[in-house]
Amino acid sequence: MHPHQSQSPDQTLPDTGVVSVVVIGYNDAGHVADAVRSALAQGPVVGEVVAVDDCSTDGSHELLTRLAAAEPRVRVVRRETNSGGCGSPRNTGLDAVTSPYVMFLDSDDVLPPGAARALLTAARDEDAEVAAGLCVRRELPSGREVPWQETLYAHSAVLTRPEQLTRLVHDTLCVNKLYRTDFLREHAIRFPEGRFPYEDIVFTARMLAAAPRMALVPDRVYLWHVRRDARQLSISLDRAHIENWRARITANRQAYEILLGAGRKELARAARAKFLDHELRMYARELGLRDAEYRRAWWAHTRAYLGEYDAADWTTSPTAPGRLIARLILASPEPRDLPRLRELAARPARLRPPYARDAGGTPVWARDLPQVTLEPYLTLPAHQAPLAVDAALVPRAPVTALRLRLHEMYGQVAAAGPQALEVEWRHRDAGRAAQRTTVALTASGDGLWSAETPVDLAGLGSGTWDLRLRVRFADGTSREMSAHARAGAGLLRRRVVPSLRFGVLLAQPYATHSGALALRLATGLHGVTSVLRGRLRRLLG
Image (cartoon, rainbow, N blue to C red):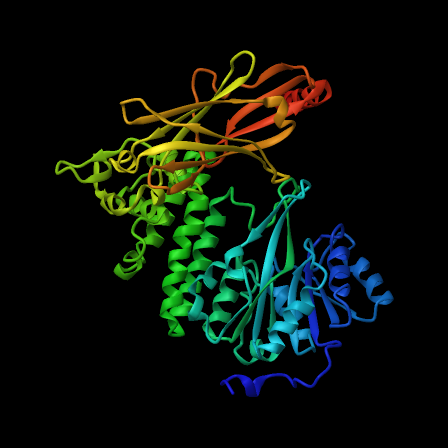
């Protein structure tokens, strides 16, 4: 019998009505009913749905009241004042639940069929205080799905303590988990109150600090709807203001202090490393979109927070891109090299030229920053290094050509013997691949290897296409890559192209937020005119 077994709910209890689902919402009358219905559709395992309305003014409360009148499992709790965040209404719901297990659901998301059953079965079979499963981010309206922290939920696992899998700190969501209610209450595990963005980060740290026995399942248990075209972006997506970055830092600082204060040193270190690998890279990719005032404030706040790291935080993974970004920020009092930082923050990372050396010949970020050494990269084999490829779409008759250039990096590329590039275009929404080909690389003698291959624009068809590459070396190893979008000389210019298949198509090569080459295509006269009209409206508006 493990230490927590005495706290388990009676294993002889039937499955009926043992899970409560807390649904929170504010002014989301267009979606909250779908969220509640998805919780009810879990079947008899869900005994109650506690719908917490955070003092909405759009009719949400009245809608929920009508749902409750028709469904006895729905209870509506209306807060008297709006909290300004997600933590307070979740705490309100947690106080109200009466079932042995509890889950959380946001008003604009849904639970997929069987989610509660899968988590409950794992929790009971393994006598776990927490059961967690796969969350899938669904982009709307496209329907594109991206698994969240997929590697954590590749297969079933049981952890007697979270330190057995420190990567758990990367899954900061509270909604893809089922919790034993008494466990949360006994350890006073609650969300920060009021307007506290990224409350999940703090709540998850408190949960991990309490050292629960955990069961992980590969089932899809949560659908996170990402609506980037919504009038009001969600807190996690609204990153355009410096207050958002301050909130990220505050939440991550508290998470570290919670874990360290509970004696979970391994998890605390992992949480700091996660900040470098996830948050720092994500925001660094977007710095080019912000104005100078934001950049200076972001740089200053980031330097101050990174200054709280100690020597032990820098000892692991010295070649991780986030650590190099952090070292550059600490070394420079003002923002610098933002285009190059954006490339390094990409996934996969790209370390673009210049490949400078200090007076002694040691690789460094730049000659005027010799303290930011790149020496650890010399120990990386080429198939693990952040190699850089440039890409450009060049108009030629009768087809467009994709021109590629692989850069040398301190001699590693030549030593590995690059032979070929595997090329494919992947539709961003549908996820399908097209026009896969392998093209030989030719050394040009100036630290570059070049290749060129035709692109059938009409064969791709309409939509947004991302370029994916894999460089293959003489020893059989390979490196998956994205490609830097080369600008200049009209290379990223929008073009109307005659097409036998569609009559006409509009091709727009462009650089993504991370600097990678992507391609938008609109086909047919209707598609082309629709895009051009939209462009005109934006220009006039």
